[in-house]
Image 1 (cartoon, rainbow, N blue to C red):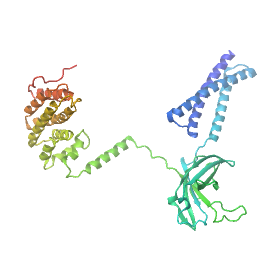
Image 2 (image 1 turned 180 degrees about the horizontal axis):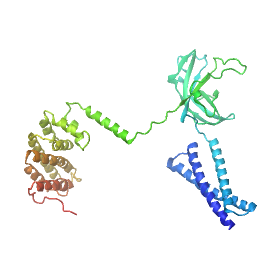
Image 3 (image 1 turned 180 degrees about the vertical axis):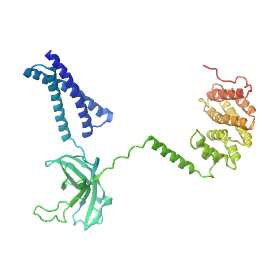
Image 4 (image 1 turned 30 degrees about the vertical axis):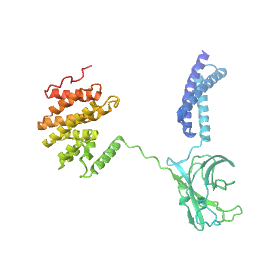
Length: 440
């Protein structure tokens, strides 16, 4: 029975160990900047979680058996001992990992940039700052004792250098990447054998007072004399890195999108070609009706559309014909233009029929008349209903020609099926061999 209690306690401590190890591993991903490339951080958390579970089970079993040996069996005290050992070890591991991690300090919840201005000796009298010649390295280091444990390289802003009080001052910036150790900075040519550095009086977790410029350091020499102008010095301050802007809400995104669309619509000059408003007719959208009103009010509407419905560009002709079909009150003068567009479709089907399969193996030449036809049918339907126009001759010719090469999907379905359905709706008999595909 005592071993059963020990096993229960071990399983419980193993489960707690797995959870605590998982939480700790997840924290370490951030503390130690574990890369998520190819799932690296995920595997790291999973591995440590499983290891923590196994270790928790073993420690719990050992602790429970020790309790049995000293004070006798008892599920409650065995479980308490097992869980206590796991929790204590997990807490010590968390403290140890946190102390060894390079966690950047924050002010008001924001990470920090370290700005340092280096003041060069007054013995340098060049017309350009010293860093303008050659390549210079600005190094920010975290020291453990007198040893550099980790370093980072910052940016040297030579273009912002200034000559002040007879000395060149060159600003630099670097991310404050760690709370650990003493912080030192140095600025020297890349090929220099040695670099003179400065220890910054920067605490582990600096406060807001460090957002202002420090005094120039060093202040004095070893003998107590003021720091001479013929030696380099520096001063520093911290700057909060701005937090990323909050993600806009769905409503804000939609409002911004609507505002951009309205701005683009209003930016179209009144004397633009009529096709400038065709994109607003491609599908129903907020500006569709306003675009139709503007198009309908054009003084040369009939002439513009009459030219476009037979355009060499099939897409443009399709858009113009669709526009005719969407006009609230299409003028009767458009009837001849749409009839001409029907004859143009017939001409282009004939051209396709006369093209050999070797010259057009993929039936690409059939796309042009089919594209026009998809715009022509809505225009025809609108003019028939509103103006009583007759397009039966043009449609019959189109359908007869579409039967010549039924192996083309565009001819058989896009034109043949759609056209024959329209004729049937008009109570007109379709030409022989033309009709909707049989239902599956």
